[in-house]
Amino acid sequence: MKLANIRNFAIIAHIDHGKSTLADRIMEQTATVSKRQLSEQLLDSMEVEQAHGVTVKSRSVRNFYQADNGQEYEYNLIDTPGHVDFAYEVSKSLAASDGAILLVDATQGVQAQTVANLRLALKHNLTIIPVINKIDNAAADVAATEAQIRALRPEFADVTILKISAKTGENVHQVLEAIYQKIPAPQGKPDAPLKALIFDSQYDSYQGIIADVRLIDGTLKSQQKLQLMQGGSIFNAQAVGIFTPDMKPVKELNAGEVGYIVTGIKDIASVQVGDTLTTAENPTKNAIPHFKPAQSMVYAGFYPKGDTSYEALKQAISKLALNDSAFHYTPEQSEALDAGFRCGFLGIFHLQIIQERLRDEYHVEVLTTAPNATYHVYLKQPQPKQEYLTITNPAKFPDFSEIDYVTESYVKAVITTPNEYLGAVMKLCDQHFGEMVDLDNQQDLVTLTYKLPVSEIAYDFFNSLKSITHGFATLDTEFLDYELVDVVKIQIQINYAAVDALDIIVPRQKADLIAHKLVKKLKYTVPRRLYPMPVQAMVENKSIARVDVPPLRKNAAVNGEKRSISKKQQLLRRQSLNKRQAVKSDIKLPQSVFDAILNIN
Ligand code: GDP
Ligand code: MG
Image (cartoon, rainbow, N blue to C red; front, top):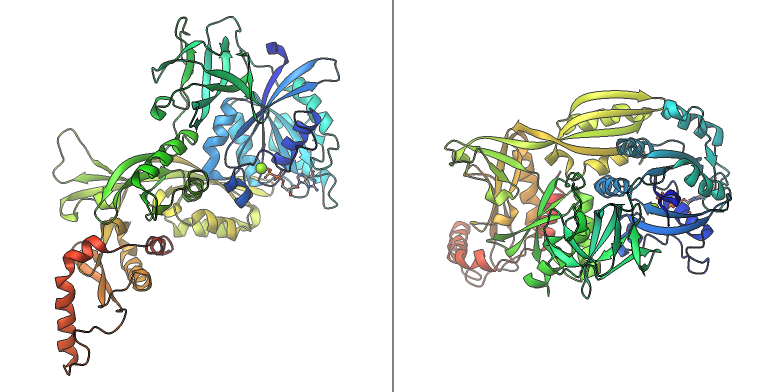
């Protein structure tokens, strides 16, 4: 296909405004898939996507369109997710697109994510086609929605705004016509040396790494000798192809096109999203500017559970990381849990999705420790060549006597909410130590910019925000910097033995409250023994909260003997002290113990 007849575009919208439904209609009306094949929401094929009703992965599909002007066009459509934890997926899709369809539900009008995604698309210099959806719905207010869209940007004041029903297909033909008329053809030099962006990848046990590519210049053929400019690997392309949406091999991919390449590479670490692919014989002069790697916001430990072995977990994690470049991991060792991994995520929902994908796609069971933020710890006696220690695992937090001061990662949080919830949102941010930076009014919506500590938004902030705004607000976060914080480590001792996997870092002013809540929760989640076990929360070597886990049943050693209560207790204590060694190594912590920490706030 010649460059002039190719269009690469994404569909962006607030959640449930009809992205996936419009993608289905486009595939149907271009006869990419037949009506019979078209199960609903064809692109949301992952189990987690069906379970949560959300799109998690972006997906690209090539469609051929016979236009009214007699020409044939190649439409590469990229479906994108909506949740903030997957904004990285959205920006990867936008990096591979030249335009975007901005879809707005006529029954709801412009919503927070409409504004947030439009902002993201403009950052990538995309041409925007605004479209009003769900005109078939009796509750649709097309005129009001149109007025809202026009007010979004001065450029929208006099553009045509299409009015469609993605469900019935009404006027979808107008969208198909607008795509080639409005969105520019990709720029690129077909005769220049090969230059392609790797914007996604997945692992296949037979074929090795399969990478999604967007060609900038040149041609990509199977059996070509290729090289990765950053990773350095040189390999032969095993096959190239397109998504229809199933994988379909083609002879070659050309400048401007989107498709996949089977690399045959089995070493997972050698193919990185964002790398530039070129030929080994005639490489391009300049690599594509690297797009910012995703920065992990929260960390948690992953440990094998049940029948899953460490090796199996390692295999699964490394393959999944390849398919989700926003997910990071490094091996770690815990006294309580043995060998596992410290994993980095963009947020708690991201963590949950990864856990479910490990279960659904790789059949491994994972024990997850309580998530935490990143800390920079400045020591009184700094180590040579190291200004501070970067702590992503609370167990590695140094003893308080060695610490000079601590800084924590902060994010810039952009929250867009309907006007009526402004007060509630400001209150929520206050409660989480937020500092307002900016407030911007657009008709019925307000966009608030706050500076917030990551540990404060890592847990339930997003859910609280959704619930106080009845689901209408959106949250967009971006790493800002590290700021001074006053935090302490709470260490949990079970039966006088420290359990490193339960360490948490909390603000000093909340330590007492959290410690008390925590030991109370642990009282009912720590597996019982034959003898009572004290559970203590220690801060800076002092026990600040304590409960006793009741014994399974009365202990034989003291049962039936006529001793005073205090004698009995003394004996029990001695008994458990004797078992200290055993306790340290054989106590099996169930997932519920870690969930108790997660639910503490
Ligand atoms: P996404 O989250 O943006 O991908 O939205 P979906 O495509 O999953 O659509 C959300 C819901 O809106 C689904 O129940 C669709 O059936 C429904 N929907 C989508 N388009 C239309 C439309 O044009 N008219 C009506 N009445 N419903 C629609
Ligand atoms: Mg969808």
